[in-house]
Amino acid sequence: MTERHTAQGGTALPRRRVLGIGGALGLIATGGLALGGGMAHHPARTGGELRTAVPVPEPSTVPLPVPPVLAPAGTHDGVDRYEITQRRVTAEILPGVRTELWTYNGTFPGPTIESRRGRPATVVHRNELPVPTVVHLHGGRTPAASDGYPTDLVLPAGWPDPAAGHGHHGGDAPKMHDERAATSRLTRTYTFPMDQRAALLWYHDHRMDFTAPAIWRGLAGLHIVRDDVEDALDLPRGPRELPLMITDRAFAEDGSLAYPALDPNLRDRPGVRAPFLAGVLGDVILVNGAPWPVHETDAARHRLRLLNASNARHYELEAVTDDGRRLDLVQIGADQGLLAAPVTHTSLPIAPAERYDVIIDFAALPPGSRVRLRNRLGTGRTREVMAFRIARAARDNSRIPAALADDLPTWRRAEASAVRDFAFRAGRTPHGRGWVIGDRAFDPSRTDVRTRLGAVEVWRLVADVHHPIHLHLVGFRVLSRGGRPPLPHDAGLKDTISLRPGESAEIITRFDGYRGRYLFHCHNAEHEDMGMMANLEII
View 1 (tube, one colour):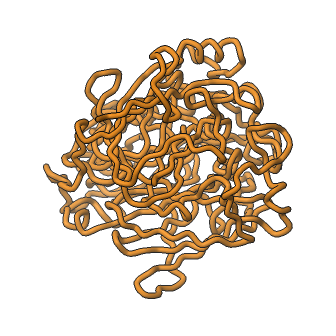
View 2: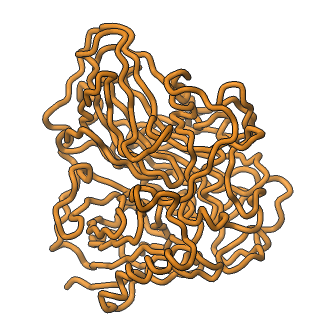
C-alpha cells in the first residue's frame, strides 16, 4: 500500500497547508523578499541584479577558454587519485581588470576531471582558503561520507574548533548544531566509485550557510564520466565536444567580484542584503570564466556540454545566425546522461545546476559566419551568452543516432511505496526571512525524510517562485507538470528540476546505491543558504 506523506515525511495535511502558495506569495509581497527589478515584466527573473562598476568588453571579443583536464596524481589498484588545492588567486577575467578569485588549483572554472564508469577515483582537497569548505560532486552516486554534507568541513590553518565554527540559521552567533559533523584539518579525501552512467557532473562548495558566496567567488569545476555505451556512438568528440559552464557575475569598482554578503569575510553571519534575498544576479555573463566569449571552429556538428552554474539566473538558450535564423539544438542528454532518443529544440531553458547535452550543426554555414548563443530571458547585455565563428569548412563523420541509450530506468507508479508532498516557498526561519520546505528551514540535526534502500517513491513538488530542486545521490524521471505531461526538455534521467512560479510537478525515483544521510534542496544558492534544504536518510 502506498503511503502519503507531507513535506517532512509525517501524516497528510490538508491540501491548502501543503501547497501554501498563497501565504508564500503574500510573504514575498509584504516581507521584503524581492523578486528583482522588473519582475512584473520578466517573470523568469527571481532575484536582484548587481551592476558592474568597471568597463566590460564587447561580446564576441574574448576567446573561449576550455578548462584543462586534470591528470591523476597517481593510480593504485585501479583507483585514480587526484589532488586539488583550494586557494586564492588574482586573475584577469575582464580585460585589463584584476580580480581575486577562490579557486580549485588556481583556475576558474576548476580543472575538469574525466572518469570511466566503474573506475573509482579519489580526490584529495587541500584548503588554503581563509574559511572552511565542503566539496559536493553534484550528480554523483557517492557514499554519504564523501557526498559533501554541509557540515563535513575541511578546515583551514588557524580555524577554531568546529564547536565555534560558522553561522547557522538559528541566529547571528556562530554555532554548530550537528553532532555528526565530520571535520578535517587542511585536507580531506573524497571517494567516488563512479558506478553510474556517462554524464556531465560538476563539483562545487557546499558549506552550510555560505554555499552561494563561495561558488560566486569561483569554487566550481566539471567532472565528466564516460562509458562504453557513449563511446559506441558516433557523436562529435575531441575539439568538437565543448564543456560550457555558464555563470553570471558583477564587478565592483576595484575589480573585485561584487556580492551583497552580510559578512564579506564569510565567517560568522550568513545571508545577503534584503534586496537580494530572492537570489543574486550579475550583469556580466561568463562562459568558462570568460565574458561573452567567441569560439572559432569548424563547419561541422558540435557537442555542447551545457551547465548553468549561476547562483540564481535562469536562461533560455537559442542559437541564432547573424541573418536571424535559429539553429536546432538537438538534445541527446540530461543531468544524468544520455536520453533514449534525441529531442529537438529551437530554444532550451536551463535553470541553476541543470545540465544539457546538445548537438548543434554548423555544416551549412560558410566560413566567416557567426552564430550567437543567446538568452531569451535576458535583457540588455545579459541577453548575450557567447558566439561561434565558423573559421573553415571541414569533414564531419559524426552523426546523431535515432536511438541513444536503452538503460534508462522504467520505474512505475505502482511500484511506489510512498507519495510525498513538498512545498518550496518563502517563509520565516529562526534567522529571519528566508526560504523553507513545508514550514521548516534546514536543521542538520533533524531527519526530515526517512526511506529504505531500494524504495521507489513519487514526490510531488510545488513552488511559489522559481525553484530548481536538486536531489543528492539519485536521478529521477519527471512524470508530470501541473497535472499535464512533462515538457520536452524533461526527457531522460535528471537530478535537478526547474519549477516555475506557481508550478507543481511529480517525479519518481528509486533510492538505491548507498545508505546514509543525504540532502535535497533548492539550487538557487541564496535560497539554499537561507533555509531551503532538507535531510533525507536512507536506511
